Amino acid sequence: MNRMLVLGTEIDRISFSEAIELALNSTAHRRGDYLVTPNTEIVLRADRSPELREAIRGAALSLPDSIGVEIACRILGTPIAERIPGIDFASALFGRMAERRQSVFLLGAEEGVAARAAAALLARFPGIGIAGTENGYFDRSIEEDIVGRINSASPDLLLVCLGSPKQELWMHRNAPRLRVGLMAGLGGALDVFSGDVPRAPESWRKIGFEWLYRLLREPKRAKRAVKLPLIVFAAIRKRIKGEREIWQRES
Ligand code: UDP
Image (tube, rainbow, N blue to C red; front, side, top):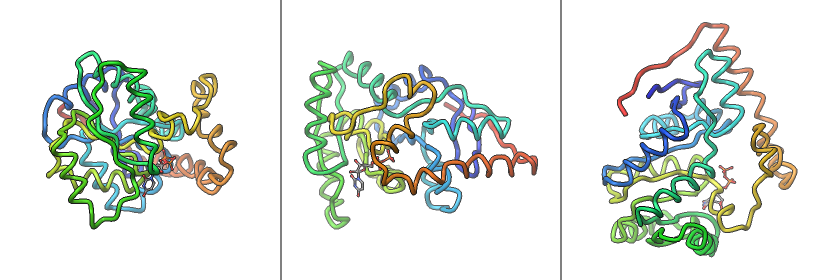
């Protein structure tokens, strides 16, 4: 698998199906693997934050989740294989895990959301095991307890849905002491799986306009959305300077 540098953020050139196989492989071990899904906002934030860049660098898988990242990669001359939206990826992974009777622990979102998401996942993917749920608004002082609960459940997959950069930093910091198969930082995924937040219609998703749908539903996201063209300008600047980085990674 190839890994590329997009304004300091490492992103994998990998197909959807290859990524699923690698993720499944991780769920079978307990070696602290984690997955990140950088979107435009995360890439822009990482450009200014060495700590976030480091956390992303430590990920076993870094999946391009947004149209902005896809365009930036094309401008940089290192196109991605395909866009991999986190929700679609998690859904496909749950399907495969259900066949193998594997388990998932859901961490994140407001009180009650993870439990509702768990019920919905059980109905949609019979065979999946729910190893536990926990809301994402815990105090740092009880992090030990949460890690202890997760470790006693030892899930094959841990969804870490705390928003960015909290989730990437959390996974990076706790990976060495967590006894879980794969961790996946998936932002607002639990709100979607629980049914609290609807997904954009497929026709919007296909052309990469999920972000616009979310913006129209939640206008308070406007402050975040206006930053999106910045990734394109930044990529053009790098391209003009001739900066282009891509390398082969062990997978
Ligand atoms: N969240 C959380 N703990 C926090 C901050 C946020 O669990 O301290 C949750 C929040 O409730 C939401 C998710 O993290 O479910 C972030 O969602 P958002 O849509 O902002 O994330 P994105 O997918 O855009 O990164």
